[in-house]
View 1 (cartoon, rainbow, N blue to C red):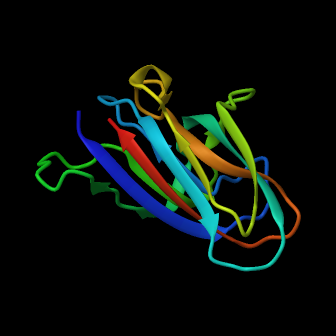
View 2 (view 1 turned 90 degrees about the horizontal axis):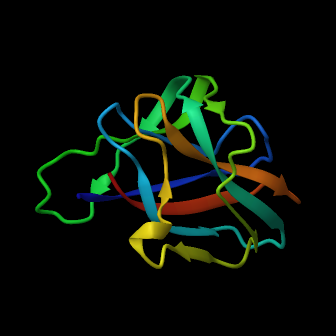
Length: 151
């Protein structure tokens, strides 16, 4: 099972409908996030609460980023699409929050699945994925994230 890494940063304006980043599976794969690193390159004093939600439809993306293989000998390209902005937002599945954490802007956060039964997984199939939302923000600032995942 190949592993990939994707890195992203954006201003974390609080929204219940617009994700910060969204990973979408193809019909032949399932996303399994095993590590998340979060922080900020700004230095003010602000609080934020992030959450990972499941997504049932990709929406219409206007910007995407490409993941990198963790093992440079991996010949398979990533099957997962990582969108960062949309003309039509993805459909976030109701009551589908699978991870939430609060942090301070000057702090860093690291979540690691302690074994493969605890991966954050999407459903398999076209249009199935996960997104990161900034649920609560005391004042918008630049958030920085790294996601490590299998597919």
